Amino acid sequence: MRIVFVGSEATPFAKTGGLADVLGSLPKALAKRGHDVELILPMHRTIKRQFMDQTTQIDTFDIPVHTKREYVGVHQLTHDGVCVTLIDNDYYFGARDTLYGHYDDGERYGFFNQAVLAMFGKLKNHPDILHLNDWQTGMIPFYLATYYEDDIAFKKVKTVFTIHNIAYQGHFDTGVLPYLNAPEDNRLLFDGHVNFLKTGIVTADKVTTVSKTYAEELMHEAYAEGMHTVLALRRNDFLGIMNGIDLEEFDPRRDPAIAQNFGLNNYLQGKRENKKNLVDAFNLIDENTPLIGVVSRLTEAKGFPIVEGVLEKYLEDHAIRFVLLGSGDANIESYFDALSRYYPGRVAVHFGYSDALARQIYAASDFFLMPSRTEPCGLAQLIAMRYGTLPIVHETGGLKDSVLPYNKYTHDGTGFSFFDYSREALGRVLDHALELYHDKKRHKQLMRRVMKEDFGWDRSATRYVRLYEDMMEE
Image 1 (cartoon, rainbow, N blue to C red):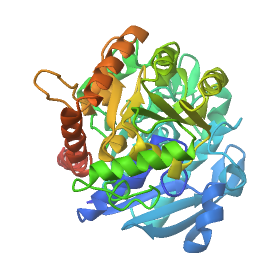
Image 2: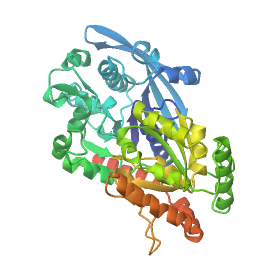
Image 3: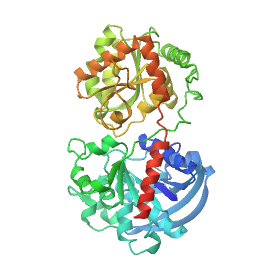
Image 4: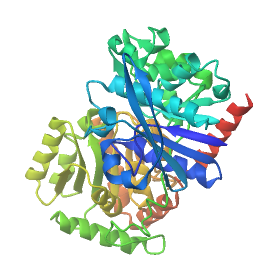
């Protein structure tokens, strides 16, 4: 089966969030199963700087964009068994320092969508499955259903459109329509704007999202950012498939970024050494106190409003140490900055992002906090568990699907979770987690259990292959 993924970012080429992790690992998992897999990305400036000399130019041509014609360069390289195709255009991508947030994002990604299909037509390498990801690819199934509907070479191409986060929809003023080479079609419009996400949802053959619970949540107004009525129309073609992580990439036995490698045979010593290293690096006091780690974007949706006012009690009592890596909203950064100044030796913060430091926090922490108000899938809790760190999560989306609440009577479970989105509920679950920490026998058992959890891509890749096969038989 020839499977082509199209997206705006993928590790190790360009990354702003979890989409990049998925597109950096799911295609690889499918290639290992013997499928012919290709990944198509824009040639962002960061990619051009780091990978251009590793690519081979396959073709060049130009396509119409409103009243002008724009250059398309097609470059390829192979990475982890996957053919990676890069769509080059300096004006739209190569000369921009960031992936999104430009005044002409609608035009830019409309160009990218048109270039992908034009490339298939020129190179005569049409896929069986075209797997599209987030709003940046939402115009592709519309173009297939309109401008390519009579092209026999595209007749058998099946499209899957995956929603990684419903909050990002790609909505633009209708003035962008001429630059999309598109008419004012109801499939493109939502609340008076062009909406790429809506277009992908209504025109793709199948629609997926990144966890079973998130798929259920998106049927409700409170979660769907206005898209619940649109998704209701696709109910029979919409399903949730849980993301995985790359078990080779995130392996505490081999990870060069952590202080001491460890596995099930030496996890107690390994966790202890990594904790000591992180505590020393941040000048925290007392490595025997439970350490709670956070690696996150600092936004309201990630749950930080309910954290404020809760941690202080535990810090006052010297019951926890707390370390945070992330950046985001200024008011949330200010809160944690003030917390670190008020509790020196008990709180450490690093604003920004560092992959090495993130891995050190996964490996060193006793607990990993993810109180997200909404979380489509979440990968950080999966990585933390891989490194023997117990998750504390709000029961939403993929957090609910991946963390089984610990039962202190039966000792079942893989972490700690709370249902009510409130400070009170968060405080109660922190109490339960700290109680477990001081029961050394049960704590050790739970650490071993979460390290044995398999959150690799095998299970999810199997479900995707089944979906693809069913689509090809229809």
